Image (cartoon, rainbow, N blue to C red; front, side, top):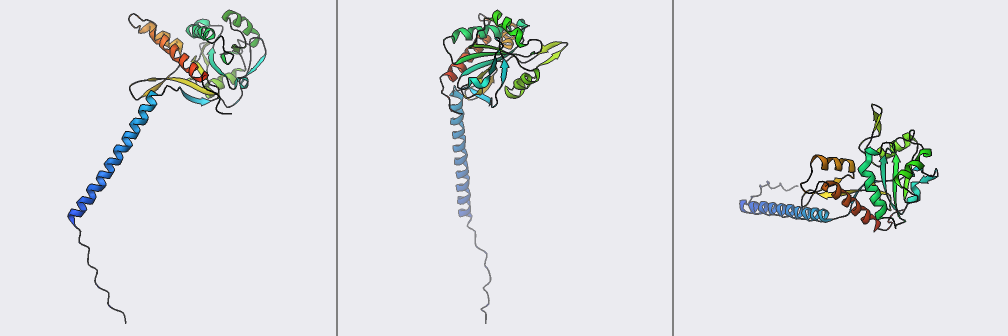
Length: 254
């Protein structure tokens, strides 16, 4: 015979204990939140003081061009070396006047290094085929193996610039004139596409594209009193910093 079940009696809740428990939980949540915030701020501080250039991708596939001596060049040959790539229109030197001056200074600055190269890619390979590159190279004083002038199929170079190097636009014609993004890019020993960064405040950084035509235009329209080429000079100094940084690093990936 079963014993009758005792009636269930609701537990008495102690308001004091409940308040104490609630306060404890809230305190733990606040402490945890503060800990996370402090950790985040420390991370942001480290990132802000980190001078390592950021990167926006990697060249995973080979890219072949015909050079100024009509030999075939392959970016795979550059594995373990550092180089800059500049999209240009050789027949319109006025469209990349300031970029050219920067490249000339780079060629002198790193003249003694066999592991640094400059690659100028024409955005109009049909109008500027390999047979014409020799003449352009003579005008520039561009000599192999340091300074390449390259041409390949139009479709190939345009896709390379837009999809791989992440240029702002694919080269195209407007009223029969070529329009293209002439930003310089730096490629490190591991084929990473490097870019410069600048601080906007103590903790934030932003990308600084190496567009020297845009920098010169800004200087002309917004000159700094007593220092009319300040933006262009600062951008070139940043470019040299990035190149020096990646030249000092060994190959780390295969």
